[in-house]
Image 1 (cartoon, rainbow, N blue to C red):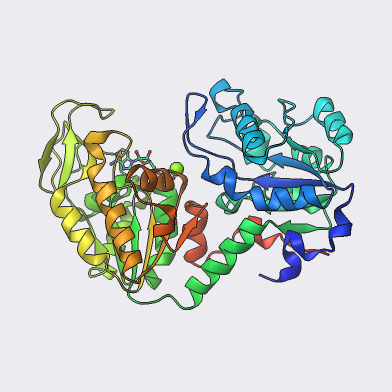
Image 2 (image 1 turned 30 degrees about the vertical axis):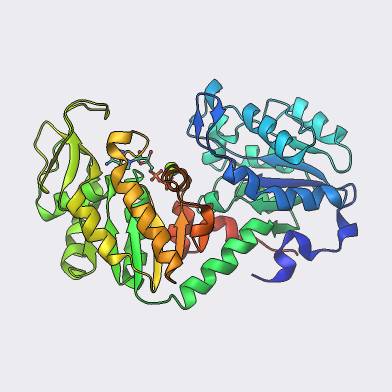
Length: 399
Ligand code: ADP
Ligand code: MG
């Protein structure tokens, strides 16, 4: 990324008194209203610090979860404003709304070096619809636009895409700059063998991104919820696990074309209780009985996957191997996390992406320093590494 596209690429004096809209990614995991992982908040500190130091008036905005246009109390940004105030040691203003008179007047009252955080952008369905009027309202709050939300850059929403048309200066935050720099190197010259580990639940997104990355990778280890579509495509029974029907055809083709590359689970940890829970956890081979749901990869699968995560080449991991939040189903994910850390120590280039994956790494007792790069993006990282252009990155310009 060109230096002048970075927020620090302009002379410091440029910012004095200017209102800067920073699209951040504060979509943090919460338990009720308690923030369980604030890595994404802390990753934005350098950019916020820089802007406050040079006298800008900083307006931060993010989404959290999927409220789908409704005001859901548990998805309020209020706890984030509080946590941000704590980590920055200043009072972050929180108007409690996204657009409208109250925010407009608050944005005008901001003094140089002050910071304000808007309410959850997705309280308005216009955000994901990339609505023109909503984009205009957001844009009217500020003079300069900064993208510091790498994790949302693969979405063309009002705050990541639509509103940027109203700005002359559209710059990258320091964290976004870092991500692009690191990931670009990985795209150009990945150390071989290049092993991709994919799991998690956003099946549709992930299989879409897999289409591209699979061509570049030497091995793709598929666990978590994503595996069942592949297993179903292979003709294995998957019980009550969800399958992305639209992707079955593609998965069948991929299994035929990339027979050697794709490694699927050979055993599972499962239960008959639909939502996980403690009831009769059993481990069997790759077939899942009709009345069962699999919530983790089994021990044979762990051994198989770990044998491919070695101290050489590149390992890119996105998505937990199971419902790791419940201890009964966390073994697969924590085993992969430990193998991942070991690979780093032995010299592999290791990249972890995804909000839940980062939480899973932490739960497994692995430090962030035991990965070469911890990306703030899951889907965005996946798509970028697959070679796709991200809307939120393609809009950056300073003219
Ligand atoms: P990331 O945020 O790292 O990109 P995702 O959002 O795609 O990952 O998925 C994370 C979620 O997937 C976790 O909450 C985890 O519990 C869940 N998950 C993974 N595998 C399974 C499974 N087999 N059954 C149910 N949930 C699963
Ligand atoms: Mg997630």
